[in-house]
Amino acid sequence: MRQYLEVAANLLAANGHEPQFYEGVYADRMIAANTDQVGVFIAGHLNAGHGSYGLIKLDYRAGRRTVDLAFGLCEIWNNGLPAQDAAGNPSNQVWLLDPWGPDFRLFPTGARVEFKTQEDRGYNNISDVHAPALLLEPLFLDNPHHVEWLIADGIQIIGQTIATAIHSWSGD
Image (cartoon, rainbow, N blue to C red; front, side):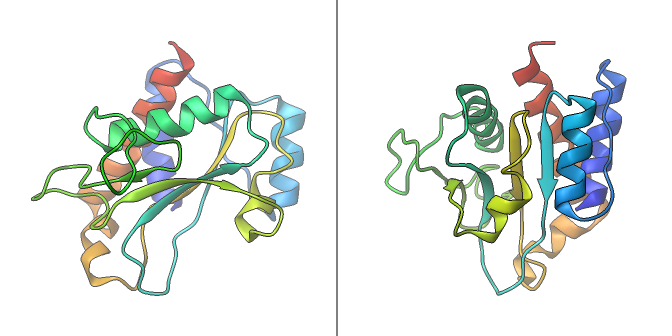
């Protein structure tokens, strides 16, 4: 995951942003981000368990700016189409279908935005950040269809997508 975020950070830096990486346990990362008064906080995971989707998670108490960032990222992953549910209707419980088209897909069966509560372990990775915060889980390591996203071209595409979303969202 760090590789995707490094690509995003380099692209954001080239556009005048000041990305920062935080090391250690999530609680320490959140404290450091708050101390630094970051403008946005992105945490990342790679899943296992043979899933075929990606997730963008945000705190169920998230403000409008965080929600806008999450849905903006989904829209970019969906080639400019608004967030959709599994039936293709505009939705705030989002499934993105074939974001890159049938021959070039980031998530084989879609990505979704989820509003996380205290019961979800992902919630604790972003819940105490004062800035808009997202937890990105783009793929499953043990899914053979996701292997292409673990090589250089896939890493570049996901990183560029993250950077584009943040840059567009920030209004710069």
